[in-house]
Image (cartoon, rainbow, N blue to C red; front, side):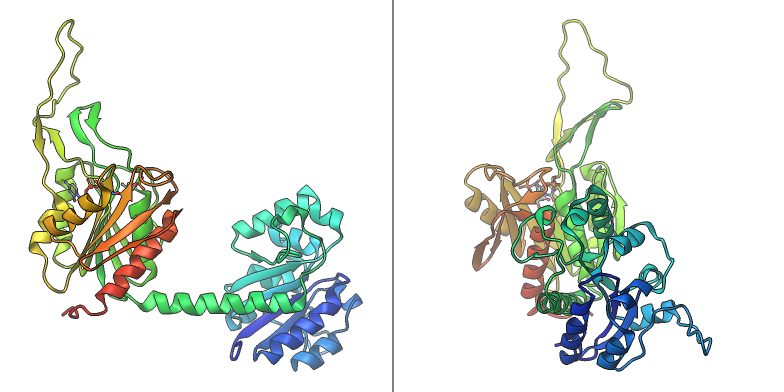
Length: 412
Ligand code: PMT
């Protein structure tokens, strides 16, 4: 399971240090190559000789070996390692990690680590529950460190968790789970490599005058999560975004900001021919004022202004009418009634391959929420999903598209 994996095992000065010998044995037995790094205090609890005999490598503890002057490079260790795990992690080491106090080899190694880092805290219960420790734990988590909570298997809340270190068998399970997740995400990151994906997101604003517009409540969140999900799969994403206040997700994403439906139509159609996949998440205004006033409309005493509307172009339908067999198009349907019927009719009318139905009748679905509840409709299947975070929904959509395009003709 861990064959060929390089792991740095950090050990700090706590009574649970004796358990790290068992953890080391389990890691070695599972096939990992392990480099042990100990803090000076750890050596009071377990000898480096034991750990070096078990790992088959000299233990690193100081910045250099006193008698030979050999320098131990924490940077090289970071390059070598696939994972760093600190078990036990004492309150003191956790505090140093959270604040960057690099006064020993272990924390220095942590600060230059490029690999995933896990810690298994171990301390007295009062120290664990202290706000200062809990703050440091939260800081480490927000820095991306994975915390194996004491007694995590049994207790829902880490605040009431015991301070005792998690058992070595469970730490091994967490390590194996990490490598499993990593290999899945490596597989996923290749699945759409080089494919060009067009995504529309957010609302459009149709100007009435310099201070007023016709718009809707779309935040752009759903579309931005979809852009991120496709980028994670190696796709080259063009994200045509209406007026939203969201940062561009990480990855290979070219963002084009637009205001109105006409601008979105222009940008989307320009990118469409090159795209293998298009996902129309935007809530595009169906109508715009027939004229937009160049100065603010003044309030007249008795007169109520009448705004004449004209139809906006339908971006999804216009792309659908130009679709070639190598392209896969996904539209959204935001419905309030006769949901399935209305959504299915969009599949045909707009010449789409898949429609993502979300209904405003479902609590937690639709505009602005962090969650959504969708049904995926294709020509021959209707699949409903439970309420999930928009990130998870985006993953489901990207997975469904990946599965569907397996049989499509390849790009030239
Ligand atoms: O942005 P969030 O706050 O996260 O909210 C997400 C969302 C609710 C906006 C999203 O999940 C969603 O449902 N988007 C589509 C909203 C919509 O306008 O649905 P529609 O049923 O009116 O349009 C059908 C499809 O045609 C959509 O793919 C739409 O992008 C597209 N369309 C519609 C009109 C138009 N002029 N051009 C289009 O491309």
